[in-house]
Image (tube, rainbow, N blue to C red; front, side, top):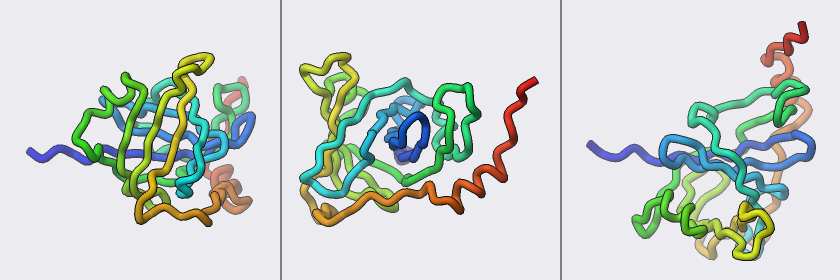
Length: 166
């Protein structure tokens, strides 16, 4: 039986501050990093990526407004999604454990080689860098564009049930 492609998602999340949650499906969960400036297709950019707790894989398609008073309160939309592969056939679990993970993304916005590398001297051990590899998909003029437009926010508010405060 062929192995199912491993999935990834990037959630744009307006919590306390706007950030992007980069998530790789690894071992039945979404291994996750908060990327304050968002991912980049420019290979000259190195983005801080702070490892956060794993999320259930069912969260991969989540869009909505997390109610006030809950962790991560604010709107969340899928900014990009697709599949990924390990180019050298390595295991993503081993890469995370080693603090160095190289992968190829097949998304709508993010394509080609990327790497995540943990800071050796990070204060908490959760600080990583997300980097685009130099390949045919790298774009030095690339600019991040939000999906949290007023129209999208209105649609989210209309379909998200209000929080029960009773």
